Image 1 (cartoon, one colour):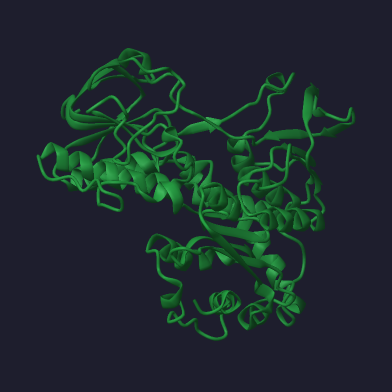
Image 2 (tube, rainbow, N blue to C red; image 1 turned 180 degrees about the horizontal axis):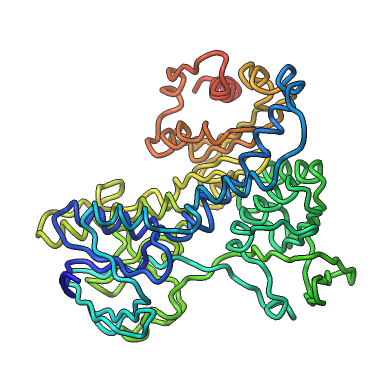
Amino acid sequence: MAGTEYDVIVLGGGAVGENVADRAVQGGLTAVIVESELVGGECSYWACMPSKALLRSAQVLRQAQRVPGAAEAVAGKLDVQAVLKRRDSFTSNWDDAGQVSWLDSAGIALVRGHGRLTGPKQVAVTAEDGSVTTLTARHAVVVSTGSDSLIPDIPGLHEASPWTSREATSAQTVPASLAIIGGGVVASEMATVYAAFGTEVTLISRGRLLANLEPFAGDLVTEALREQGATVLLDTETTRVTRNGDAVEIELGDGSTITAEQVLVATGRTPRTQDVGLDSIGLKPGSWLETDDTLLVKGFDWLYATGDVTHRALLTHQGKYQARAAGDVIAARAAGKPVADQPWGAHVATADHQAVPQVTFTEPEVASVGLTAKAAKDAGYDVRVVDYEIGNVAGASVRLDGYKGTARMVVDEQRKVLLGVTFAGPEVGDLLQAATVAVVGEVPIDRLWHAVPAYPTVSEIWLRLLETYGRP
């Protein structure tokens, strides 16, 4: 090891931690990443990449089956083993050699082991063989350890050894039946995956699906899952889980039971801060880390947090956005340079508050940015909501026969700018960046009229939304 003192120590070598370290190094500092598992983290091996690889094959097949000419050429069923093999290629078979090589090329040091804070700017790293290395930070320690699946306190659930998102995205065999507890993004995406695989899927949600998004989005996904053969139980409590050999029995709030080969829990996330030494610096182990917009943990001038542990926006792209701001501001402060910490400045993560983009890769996809209509009204805005059926756009009908989907824009009537946009429909994720630019840039409605969408593309939905709104 070149040394045990660095300008910046990053706990966690996932995509977020990598970005913090990279920006710090580009800013002229030295940086070391401490990682106990695979460099690349959750997104690379158990979340974003494998889940989307699993989803894509069935999506392409279903779309081909809905376009005459292509439909006649499509024969046979989904090859599940080929899908799993393709997924394995995206995870590099859970080998991080490529990621480690990138760290080397970027000038970022790596220490393998479990890192714990032992005091201000001090980290002790325990390696697999039990040896301990003490690292010292000259300027900053950044906690980028991510989050774990939350296992709710349902009687018998822990003892039933349930799947979490990790097992669901890395499975090498497909269960004949799968019960999913949860109604959010992971639950909905994994229900879509396993229904396509031919698994008998039962989705159990305490409320509606995708409850944090516009209501029509969850309704469309619910309808599609049922069409794909899944059983979707809404407004349903899970009261007990019991494993009996190779089967799991799930008792519901109405006293009925469901039996499945496996149960997947997808009910939220918990911060991976239980064992990183927070108690040594006066913080509560297992807590979320509250930061200001420069990602500095409140009450400290050397401790930063990025990604899921901040509880700001639990999305990889948003964590990487935070990481870029944090790495840059650490370098600026270390060099005594001015800090651009005003909203939308170079050293802040302003977008975390009201301009977060997100795609749920179900069938149909759901793409959203900014505030929902309810959130905007709750925040006190004078809101007008404009909806339009995407299937009525020429470009949508050309792309896919029977295209079904809905678009919504939420307008701040006082300023005549967009507060939020949601699309639900096939492949709408590709529409999201334009919406994000409009929301972040606060582009006036009258200027949006001059952003002419090409014909015939699905992007013409923008024209139809504006026409429905009317000239300001």
